[in-house]
Length: 99
Image (tube, rainbow, N blue to C red):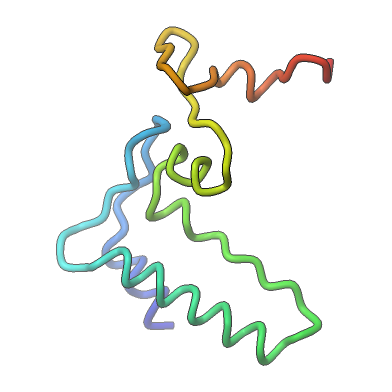
């Protein structure tokens, strides 16, 4: 409960672009909050081994592109903002060969 209360007290908003991290109020180390979330996940998995416990809180700490790069995927850019090494969001939403 304390972990969730911290989120509700300090979290401001998710960002609308691919490179900005979500906003939090000052007074919290979001990386410690993130690490604590994984500690909670591990405890839940230990107590409920037959249940698939999936963490879904990285989006509140890292940008879209940071999460993609962590997963071994290319970062994303908007169609009118081509950047070396990035793929267009259009290619992500409408991959060629899957139409």
